[in-house]
Image (cartoon, rainbow, N blue to C red; front, top):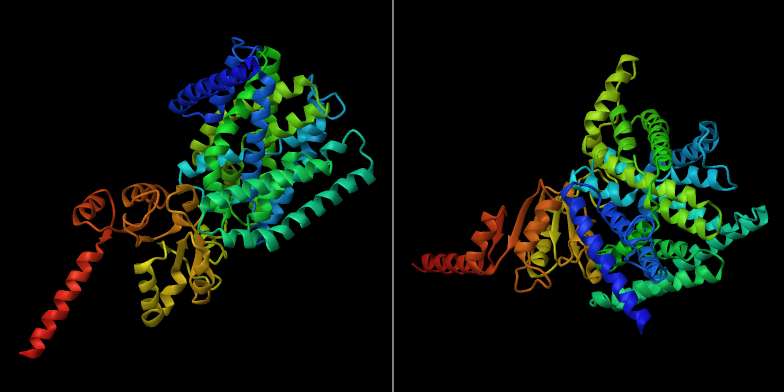
Length: 566
């Protein structure tokens, strides 16, 4: 009983300190992760007040959070969408990681630093410095509304490839102590079998389960979590890490339209456990000595240099532009939370020294702070590099980013014939169905510009056959809306009034849409004229009032009939 009370107290203290420190980080415009880690450091015995004593239990709970984090990262890796990125994106994704690892592995020994001398230290340093932070980058680019620019898309593409490289490394990680080619090939073979098994079950079993419970979002969520932990267990039994199993589980359902909904519903659960994961990391942070700070500074300088030489030249060579090359490199100028995961697993396998883990953790914290300002001023910094290269005759000759953004990507924002999908209809209910019928009869060409987003996949085939693009969206969960191409929309229409919306209302929806679709005209639906006026005052371009429209129709119909009878 005492142990349970201690665990409850430690969890409570961890959440309290993480919350307070993350609020301070927010005010100072720093990543929230920094607040979590510093909160853990204050609680720990290494450089804090020894307020948390049950570190083992905290780490156990944080491992659950880590599994959910990697599961969601896996959900973001849609292999079908990855295949549509084209040869340029594949070239960049492959060269960035391989060149970075090779350069760091070859050059680092010449620095003469007091780390990297153990058997696997150098390999872990090379891998850690080749990965960037998905959490930090995506959050900051979304805040700057740059996630859908050409440089933003290149940045996200590199992050996706980095996640895949990390998966491959985690697959061979357990066998590094006995690096026999047969064992490594066996590990790779097991990974392939696990992926094949997961995708087969997803296609033939999960698809039917999801279709059967499509009207129950809670059951979709529970089914997804069950699948995550089932694949984790299979991976563990097969000699792979449970974390890798979580990634594969996420990837295996990413192609389904429910992936965005699973992400939106898992975020609250994930964030709780992820907070404890980073608090647990903070508990291990040693009191930083001048030596550790000096080593961290050298590592950060090397990381920044490597980003510049492995990303910008490749993008310039691919005719994506000098500025886009440097913008992408600057956006990725931090060390990934994935690197911390890999180092934590490496410490468990006794591959690396505690000193190396402490130095990389310190470097990650410092780099995350620097990265906030680098991304904030990325255009100014990139312009400086652009001017320097212009002096030696390298100009910014690039494929037009506007064409790149708009010409058919095959994703939510484009269509195979080059038509832009810039009109988004939220909800396929009475008004939307009538609208679709009118379009079929009166304006077939407009169909190619429209995405219809709804939670019920039963209408997907019907709408797709008519030429519309269907996307999954749960209007009550803003995170599910961020995946349907709202940023590029010229018009967003919700044809459902508050009487039929579940878990939200048009007022909250307007606030969400204003952030996700800053350039779009927003059209909403309301049952009450007073509420309609308020929505217009708050920023809606137009508000449909079904009762008023029906009244106007009846008046016109009766008036015409009376005139005809006279």
